[in-house]
Length: 104
Image (cartoon, rainbow, N blue to C red; front, side, top):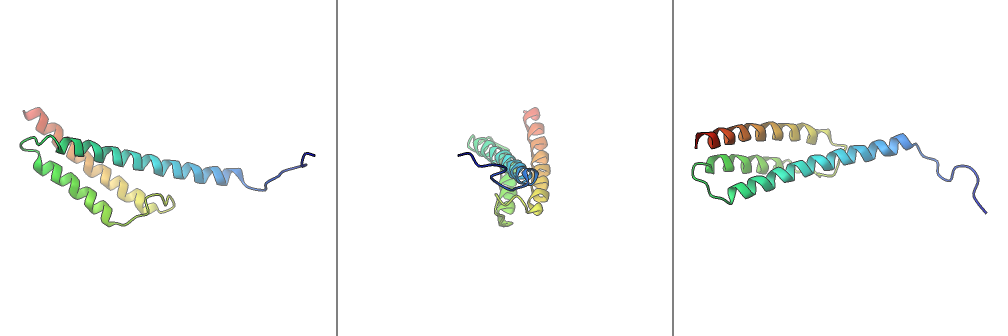
């Protein structure tokens, strides 16, 4: 026998909104870890003159780690602000990296 009416009483918008927020956090983490991997690969090449730039990046990563976030806790907005600041700083390092490459 089939049950009649709704089997579950929930607000779809609220549930999917939370899922959407979680997915956005997961994408930010993927972006961050991809950047870290790229800089690790770059650091592995031991290119003369890039030590300061590489150290600057890993200092940024260490500063971010010290904040002690639960990275999957998508309701903490302070992560989003710090993530944005991290990306701005990485963007500045990438600009410096591009200038270094162009000078060679």
